[in-house]
Length: 141
Image (cartoon, rainbow, N blue to C red):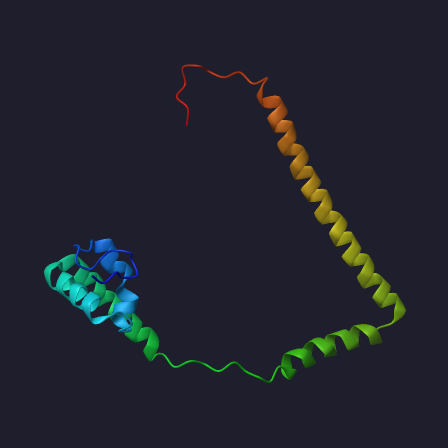
């Protein structure tokens, strides 16, 4: 007896899920003739599996019909733009560079203050929740 990828002997009746697990290998013709015959038989008798295999096969055909795009090997335009930006920052006056660094530092301090305030507000709300009056007859949402 043949034992397929699903671990079920082909002489036994394959369940719909086991047949669906074999769709890829069935489509690519990577399974043996005995298991292929059983799956073909199952698809001819089970309309639900046949419909799902049809959709599966059409999807794979569409995906495989799309030409593979070759990645661009010329990365210089992106690097050149970034290098120009760095070079222009280095050419800036000392005062302008100090000002940019100061603005970046203030932005980070502001972000930290916002996060700290949000955390403090959440912790305060949790601590005060025990002092709030709860109506025992009100339905919980």
